[in-house]
Length: 261
Image 1 (cartoon, helix red, strand yellow):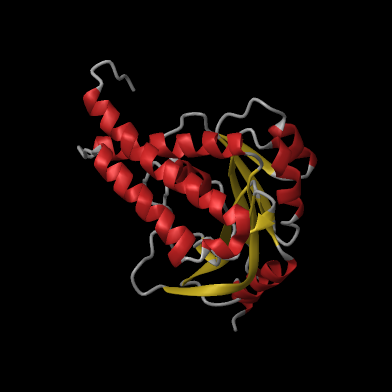
Image 2 (cartoon, helix red, strand yellow):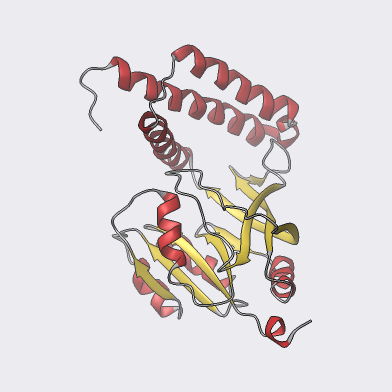
């Protein structure tokens, strides 16, 4: 193992907006990182004050062009060898932190995924297709970047690069109420419809119904969401609703002559 790899550095970077209730616990779980950056998209709460009090860097870009573009801009602020992407409502467990520290001493052509365990309506889900929710989060800074997607952005996997999995969970405290879920879901639905509309795609209400039923069946039956109890049933129903809404949004744009972006 080379001396350079032994001394490799890593930045933990958070994309956030109005996350003052989450930022402290998130940043407190990142003590293993050489640098912590919060890349903000226009918070109106005291996020900046919290970030600076905790000794992390605060940067801001209010010209929102989608999640993919925001992550690309954020990555330009990173000067370390590696970067680890984390959301404000996530926490790194000690086991995952140890796994990250070992991984960054490896070669510089590997992208790492983590298992995300989500807390939903009173419990951590172990089924429903939500665990293990493997997401790519750790990579050499110069190796890759996120794509341009408005929502559900993904890391580009270059040719001849490796993908490996880290041990330890990334805890995800995703929704604190039904209202919170519906607000986030509406935002994702709009971004999905925006993206599809820009590509000239259309949708029907029949597609919305079919995909919604399929979503529920997959989560609750095929992915054994029933083993997650009432929380599993609720998240399956809500996910089916969210699936229908995004198709309905796209359909309404074509059928409502008064629709305005």
